Length: 81
Image 1: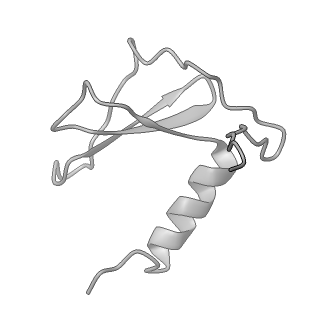
Image 2: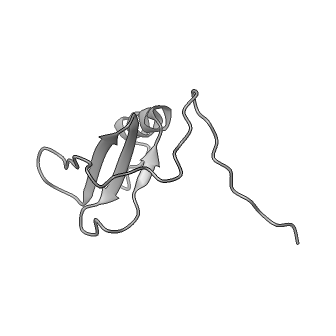
């Protein structure tokens, strides 16, 4: 069986850091305070976490990845209804 490896890919020249320091991140929720998602802009990257479990891992996006996610959300790509 072949051994699988994961490599970080560069999008638009951005390389995700292996360990981005989020200890001083300014976490923000939606303006209405609904939901469990918080985001923070740190060192040119966008971090996303579950506010109900802030000690858990955060997702880290490059600007290109974040742009694609936001565009998809605006277009209804993630609507479940």
